[in-house]
Length: 325
Image (cartoon, rainbow, N blue to C red; front, side, top):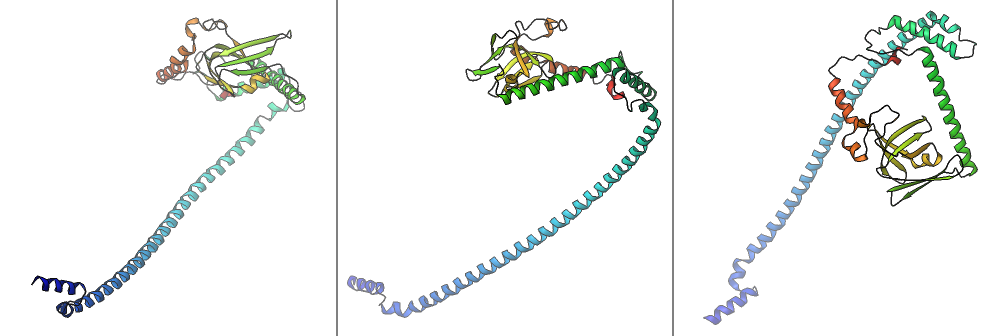
């Protein structure tokens, strides 16, 4: 019995068993046919899905383009409308300015008749300023000035002349520096940065031809002399780099001085022996910071902003008098 069963199993493995051939072979053929049909259906379904996806994407792209074009036209129309309104306002303002300017020229033509063909000198400028002040007082109310004093024509003319002299001296210095650089002459100022930006060494020649050597460090109290404005600025060195020196002035302002300006002499640095000394006897010692740390911890600009916030609710009692001229 066992031998017969083993023989049947062997025949079944070799597909020669009579009962297997008679019953299972037809189903195997049907199975293969059904698999082929299913594969074809899957292929057709994938093709249909891809075609539907392409159609949906094209339709969505068409809708997007149409909405984009509609929005673009709407925005352009709004822009054109606003631009037309602004242009109309500008044209109206230009017409008003032309009318007013022509009227003013005709009205004040006698005031400027004296200036034609004459050389400008202080007396003539003072006379014209007095006339301008009289016209301004007629059209502007200065009663709300609290303790304000209007500058006299003499003061204005002297300030203008002094500023012109400063600009002329500054221009002469710049031209001299350019000529020195073009000729290759040593300007006599040597700047060296030492200890990886911790120290700055300035070697200059004084009026007697002697060498003056100064070394600055971060935190030193210095005086910055500007040849352009001809003013002295007191502060502390906060940082030294290869291109510039950063300072914090006693008023809290941060200043950057280029190394190139130090080399050309447009800016000069000097050490201040005592940071707490009175500056020109104007500021009290208690109002001056004695070190960079103290200045950064309590900067004066913060106190100024606090004072401004406190005074915002108060009535403004001063104006810029320059607006009246």
